[in-house]
Length: 359
Ligand SMILES: NC(=O)c1ccc[n+]([C@@H]2O[C@H](COP(=O)([O-])OP(=O)(O)OC[C@H]3O[C@@H](n4cnc5c(N)ncnc54)[C@H](O)[C@@H]3O)[C@@H](O)[C@H]2O)c1
Image 1 (cartoon, helix red, strand yellow):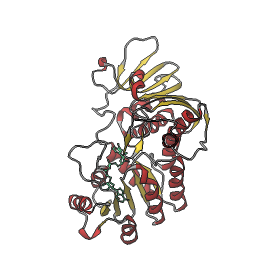
Image 2: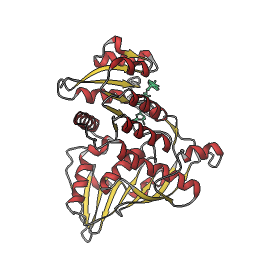
Image 3: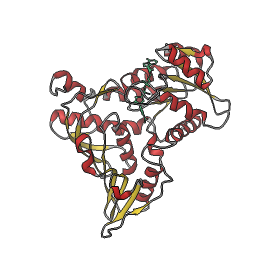
Image 4: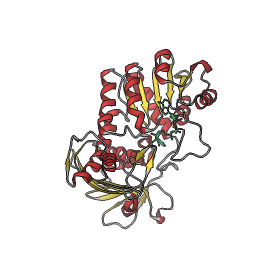
């Protein structure tokens, strides 16, 4: 089979210091494609609204000068791409993915979070289904050893029957997109039945053009009966670790905050025993290294085989539904039964109506 032709939308500048005003994620995608075995893919074209950014990117990754664009629709029309990587900010993901699906590449690998409204998240998955295009999201962390080995412990019964999964970190949406994906992975079930949440949004917090609450507390239940709990902002530390899985016989912690863990990233304890068992994750921690490379490799292999990767659009939808449902729950002050019917972004809507007034 000939090399798959890869194109990039939203090359970004390559930041000297990555941060919430620009990570240049397309560079991470490009590095991951280049790490694939020789001949698997060809970095064929790229596009950014700023020509200089796309030109610099093209030079860095060996893309021919004539395949540099500032209009992605023109790139899609001219370049016969097999895979398109989308690394723009989330508020334009949906439009770009829907337009790209119409050009019928084999696959679209898009940055998280999916999109800025629940309706748009569903539309982008539906557009790819209709056009028979494989859609994947960069929820790369589930390929990391602390998470893989954590799930293995659950499957081996190290903590008995799984009862509950928890996270305490960051926010629900921008960073949280990863966390809901990971908890679904640990729970062995990505779909939730109901959600109850409350938020505080007093201080303006717009990241990548999207509102993010300051603090949230939420409970939900997966279809397999496993309970979920999440805390963000000022309550995040109350959980005591990034991720926890609680079973009938014990508890697993991933990325514990306990200083006694001495920088180790996975541990478990059986109830009734005071000693933690530490599991060697080969220095892999919550963020890497090498996770984006694995996510891209899995996505490319599955796209070639015509199958869904682990980071497919449906698993992203299930985690993302919980996020939008928590914001909606805060709006209606009650339990939200899923599937979620409110297609907007309740947090952004509440800001627009003045129901929350971040300053
Ligand atoms: N997977 C992760 O761990 C991770 C980490 C950081 C950021 N992200 C996500 O990556 C995404 C991109 O963030 P970033 O920091 O890399 O962005 P960035 O600002 O570095 O780059 C985005 C680029 O997209 C371009 N762009 C916007 N609209 C466009 C259009 N219509 N056509 C072509 N180009 C367009 C912009 O000009 C910009 O250069 C965000 O959704 C963010 O949440 C993911």
